[in-house]
Amino acid sequence: MKDERKKMKEEKDDRDVLKLCTLSGTTEIGRNCNFAQYKDEIVVIDAGYSFPGQEMYGIDYLIPNTRYLKKNKQYIKAILITHGHLDHIGALRWMLPDLGYPPIYAGGFAKSLIELKMKEYKMEDKVKIYGVDRNSQITIGKYFKASFIGINHSIPDAFSIFLESPKGNLFFSGDFKFDVKPANEPLSDYQKLHSLRGKVDLALIESTNATVPGKAPSETEVSKNLEEVISNYPGRIILSAFSSLITRLYSVIEIAKRTNRKVLLAGRSLDQAITIARNNGYIKVEDDIFIKDKELGKYPDNRILILCTGSQGERFAVLNRISLNEHRTIKIKKGDLVIMSSSEIPENISKIEKMTDRIIALGADLMKDTVNLKIHSTGHGNQEDIRAMVNMIKPKYIMPIHGSLTFRYFNKQNLEKWGFNKNNIFLTDDGQMWEYDGRTWRRGKKIESKPILIDGLGVGDIGDIVLKDRKQLSEFGVFTVILNLSANTKKIIGKPRFLSRGFIYFKHSHELLKEIQNCIFDTHREWLNSQKDIEQANEKELKTQLEKNLGKLIYKKTEREPIILVDVM
Ligand SMILES: [Zn+2]
Ligand SMILES: [Zn+2]
Image 1 (cartoon, rainbow, N blue to C red):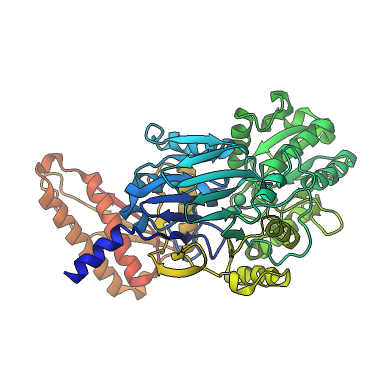
Image 2: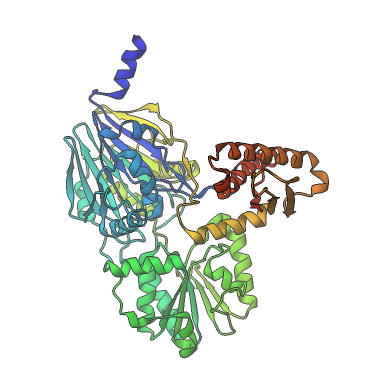
């Protein structure tokens, strides 16, 4: 009886408190998702995914845990999106069905990206998505009101969000920086930020660059430096940048135009990003600036700019393939200049160096971002940007998010140094609920926040599958089973035969092979029993089932994941 009552209370919480849950993406960069709850209404902010660590083979994405939200889906009134990067929108296609397709509010660029994904996964009829801009103020349900505030980041239409409730107001910084001279986009909306002073009961502030002193360089400065380099260079330019950094890509294309160079877009993600940006009016250039691979020879070297991805030395990205001389049409030659308009993610540094070694060895000149010549700027504010933000809005309480504990810790230390009371700065965790009674915040319960693993196989991206196979092959080898079935009875004739390359040495694996054999017999027996008509037996089903069961067994026994091929004859 007592338990029953407690359960009832859990489901419907009528207490007069504003709740905030830092569900996901708090303690790292990626998989962002927070939500606010007041009585029977919930508003979700962002729904991003992250990439798995190196040990999670076969897993493509991690998405926020949806257990609590699923259970309370009838209360979810809206999903608000700060901006269109995948660590903020990438999980929507998996989360939306779980949450019953609540309406999404997103800026124009994010909206286009989301709509494209929804179409790809045939969800466009179920999804309600509304575009917002810098002037949008929306009423959500009975209790909430949200305002979108234009800030600078590295993608068009990036916002901070101010969320009002009857019991208190929240501010979500989103990913931001203050660019004093932004390229191709307006300044941050300082006036609106100022107008929030005294109204923010808790500000969630990103911590990505909390350890970097000074101010994030302006995109215009970067663009000016790039133009100087490019216009004075007599040979071909191969420039690599992040494909999510739309503002930079636009600048580079404009520089090409001004310096009379044609642009070759090399790399699928880059091509896609620019197509979306052009289709939606975020990048305004004529078609004739772009050329195809085969036209490379038609123009003199000083009229060519190749824009590509792969600044992190990713194995199959264009720049790395070029450096390995593996690219079909783009070959480095003496006199080329490779410009890395990017930062180096620490875990990639040695990979990047090996790649640039190869580029130099092939005879190209190389240019990287340096303190003296800024050819890259972060989309995330440095210490002075963060300081400017909190000084403008003067929140009562602050919560550093979007970074490991170390980064959030330094964010907190800076805030203290700048005069914020350390008792009013909270370091939170994923899944942590917070409650505000109008005066103080206190830690509530912790809800389940373990990320959900997504295996993208079968979702339909052949390119990804091929990459995955290659990776799997290189790491675990291949294990092949050949099975002879009788044409009439479909019983196994003789023993299964095995072939292996790079997986195990048969001589020393008798026990494992015996278990594999048993697994094959068991799976086959089960399959045979399930077939209604032996003559029409579905052998494809047997193959699939064998590959699955063997995969499981082999992983359990060896912690390896070779490619498993079954051939039924
Ligand atoms: Zn971002
Ligand atoms: Zn982010």
